[in-house]
Image (cartoon, rainbow, N blue to C red; front, side, top):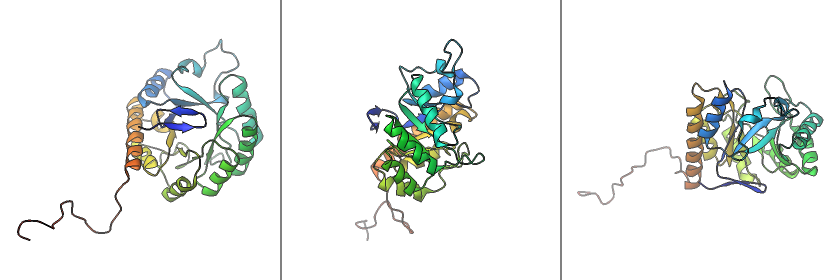
Length: 257
């Protein structure tokens, strides 16, 4: 498996996992280990970073093994997301940020206008910005122009498990993207992750698909294998689709013909 390179860092795994919705910290730890992931995203606003004498989600993440990617989950305006990213950096988490600026509470679709504004500001402020966005090739280009280190279009609404709903848009984004493309949100099972990678995604970020599975640890391993298989298939190059059959054993040269 070839490495994933984002900004100045190299990752052996192309799977990025989250920390929410697990039944217990111990299950989360085991799932993270089974996933083979190098990078774990944590919501700045949902962890205790102010008083480390109290229990925190961070107590269950081995930062010598995993790279922390703080995220701005729960932010609905650019200013709010910028403040949250800066808070995470000041608390010593990272100068990287998975940037989320939500535009609608029910669908959790991103507010792309606010997202571009926040990206531009945080890049100027020294952040490595990975923005969660819609599967709109034009918006992805604007985010690149604003300095994003990667673009992270959704496959489907967050936590929906619907899989990739707009295959062609992901293909178009892949064709024109000058930075890594990470499919973020909507994956439900291993075949969804494999498809994302077969379309040319450089990686997949997921949380609910693993944490909400009946067996999160087994699903984490399945996702690891799916991402690897999808990447290998993409690099191998699939055969063209054809309307009619094409025999595996050609008839030319057969005895009696």
